[in-house]
Figure 1 (tube, helix red, strand yellow):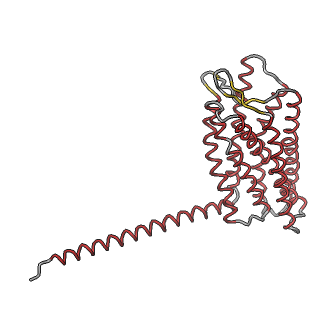
Figure 2: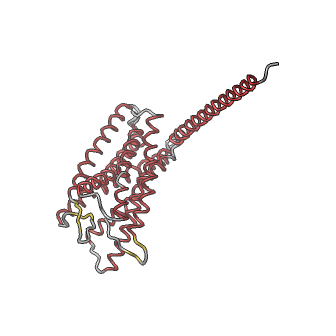
Figure 3: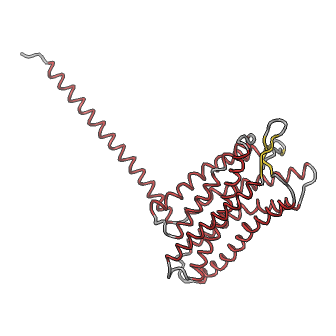
Length: 328
């Protein structure tokens, strides 16, 4: 996860730590808004809103791990072994739950648009969405705990701590890559199949009202694959290819650092992409207008109170002058 490799004068760990900090800030603000807006303006029983809420929660779980990684890349791991396992579990929990929830959302769109069987039973769709979200979290928690058990903190002679896998045996690596295959490649294949059928159906239909929703979901899935795809592909390459020589190791580390930052940036992508939805943009504008209205109302009341105080002071001053006038 770290290594402090240099390319010329560039320290990629330092750059990674510096970039992770703004990613954390943008992701925290965006996903909190994405959680709050459906609660304020929408019914949470809606299946689409349930998926949006769970995806935002998944991104928030991942987001909360970013400050720890920033400290690690800028300095070294100073939080101990237990917290490293906890942060690792949360990191993989955010990754696995995101891909499973995106797959469930895509399948939901596939059934709605292509098979056209949900509209007759909205309650059934909502119950299936709840079950899919619950299953996504259960599977993700189990897989992330399995990953967290396999890592530990190593302390070197200069008292610097590094995060390492407990074992590099072929059995451990085989289990890990099998898990990644089931929780990344299989969902990827399902998403590609479903969206191919969805796009074909939408392009052939005369009614294009659902077109914008499909575009939003398509962009969200593409963003996930673009951000996490190169990182996971590189992990597979590293399983079968061992770089020889300092130059090859440095190039591998540079690629790993770049793809890692690209993967980390995904947690702030979903809020931006969901703003393509007119409904969510309208809710956000309503929220901002309410805040502006409250601020103006507060300023108006403060101004009125100030005017009253000034008038009272002026009247009191005039009264004092009148009382001081000598009587004839």
